[in-house]
Amino acid sequence: MAERLISKRLKFSNGQQKGFINQSQEKLRLNLKELANLLKINTRTLSDWKREKFLISLKAARILSRKSRIKIPQDVKIRKEFWYTTKGAKKGGTNMYKKYGRVGGDPGWRY
Image 1: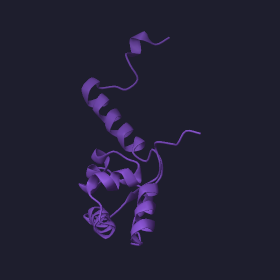
Image 2: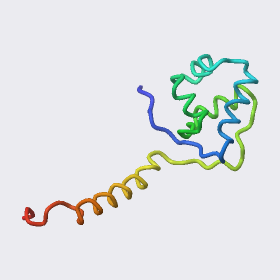
Image 3: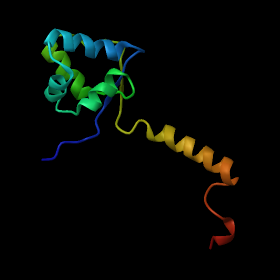
Image 4: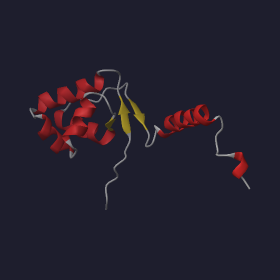
């Protein structure tokens, strides 16, 4: 059975996600590539998580926590799948309205 690519994400406070990954990496004594292989992800994804460009997946955080015996902080928020779509849709709708002055196409072409 195929594994789902999109999963729940964890929202850490600023700097906390980077710290969690760095502590886990130090405790496990793995370099970036080895840690990425452990999590079954690309090294680019891991470096993006360390830079806090993207939110870490719940699955990866649990693996890191279990292997390194470092607890996931209590104040993290769990984001559901596709949590970002509402935010993006609002931005897209606003930009369409600014650009064309209407949303939904040309009224003259409606039936």
